[in-house]
Amino acid sequence: MGSRENNQGLVRNANFQGPRLGGSKFLKEIGNNPRAALSNITNFKREASGLGAVRDKKLSNLGHRPITRRFAAQMVQQNPNESEVPNPTGVRECDQGTKKLSSTTTVDPSGLVDLGIIDVEDSEEEDFDAVPMYVKHTEAMLDEIDRMEEDEESEDPIMDIDTSSLKDSLSVVDYIDDIYAHYRKTENQSCVSPCYMAQQPDINEKMRAILIDWLIEVHYKFELMDETLFLTVNLIDRFLESQVVVRKKLQLVGVTAMLLACKYEEVSVPVVEDFVLISDKAYTRQDVLGMEKSMVNKLQFNFSVPTPYVFMRRFLKAAQSDKKLELLSFFLIELSLVEYEMLKFSPSLLAAAAIYTAQCSLSRFKQWSKTCEWYTNYSEDELQECSRMMVSFHQKAETGRLTGVHRKYSTWKFGYAAKAEPAEFLLNP
Image (cartoon, rainbow, N blue to C red; front, side, top):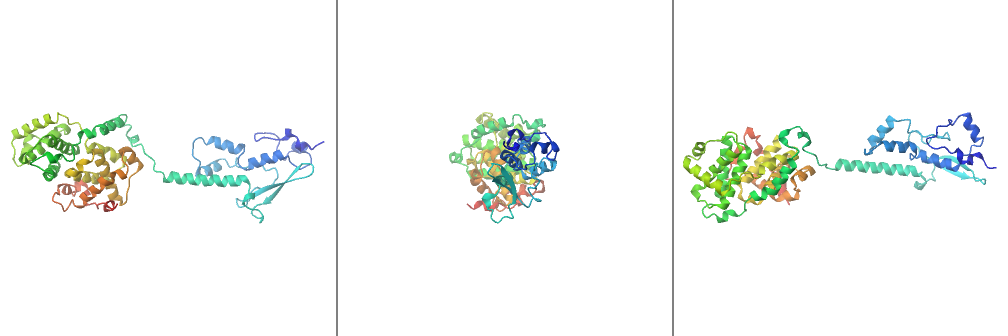
């Protein structure tokens, strides 16, 4: 008759609520033989390895929360008793976390198994392969957790920039994505050919630059809105692309375009006489009204176009800009308005490149986050050409022939943005 320890009915699972290990009833069941069934030893090792019911219970409570060292430590502190596994041998598995113990088994002729405990660290004959499997699994798991933590720290998440504006009805969060998708779709329709000046026999790109540089100063003097300036430049280019203008009428085109932009954007609109005075009475009131009629008919009353300004506002929000970054970005893009060669870039690209260049100027290293890339739809590489041109304009802004933009942004009102150091390192390939 075999020993009662080999009776499978005596094997207890992790949820068994029977007598304690030291009780008399338990001793009566197992008799005087201290041997334990091999299946019991297997169950004990599974529990001791942290893969038993206690560990399963903890993991089931984790939900979708990522496992980190800090979170694991919090779980142990909150449930210190659950981390203790019953030890029927009475021998501690570890001593203050400095010694790892391994179990060895011997089989006698009767088929019974004896359980012995040896100190892994004190045994010189033990090699790495002799370390219990659960120790290897634990170390591998901790290494994986470390790797996950490093990946999370190095990852640049894409932020939802509209979360903070949910309660602001003017931000139209429910429609903002559709609005900018429409801007993207229609921005090319409002652009002009980058070589349209070739069909103008009496004016050239230098005259255009002088006109716009002067209008930037007029815009500043009248204290008009930013939207008005960008729309003014757009109206001038679209009109000159489709209508031949003689040199003496070019300034008239400029003041009339600003008058129309004011009527479209401003609440308080300057009167015609203001523009007559600002042009030193070179034109009469009838001249301005006649040019106004000619322009609106040639442009078919289409003033609702996406200028760089609308993209600037959205992209600055994505860049989490402060006032310093905002002013420097507008300084760079207004420098670009003067330059005829910048017409080859779309309004959204100009806005993104201005913000990228401003960030690089302030931080003194290349900076373009995943959030900026997501909301602008431009990678850092796509901005390089336009950005380098802006840096070159920044370098010569103070010493060039046209310094209207530099003077404007060298004032306290505009934060002395023109005094910022150009990001010259962007010029290096």
